[in-house]
Image (cartoon, rainbow, N blue to C red):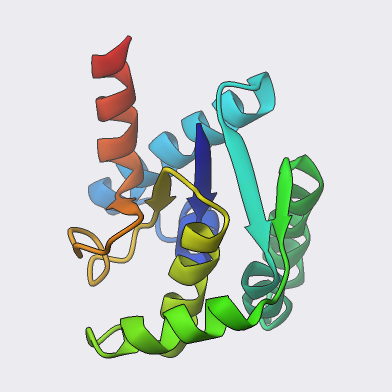
Length: 144
């Protein structure tokens, strides 16, 4: 199974852990990453993750997140089809960077796009399932 974690998902463990929802999402995200390391899931990294992560003003966060590029089993480089898909997704009211990350996941044939961005969760987009890390873990446990 191929998965794509967006930038906000990678940043979640660095957010305020005094908020229970953030704490639960962080735990689920870290669990998913552990499963990636074990080979349960194939992780896709992209040029958009590079772009957004390079823009991160916090060096510690940036370095920790960037390590996942080497762990990923696939890299999604820029392609014109990604830009075209992103432009279509913008018509759904999704921000440009988010549309390009979703387009990278679709272009890479990912099964899931995992995000903590509440504006993206439950968006119905052909070719990809968008899900919160907590719901992803719950769904995968149901399949076992």
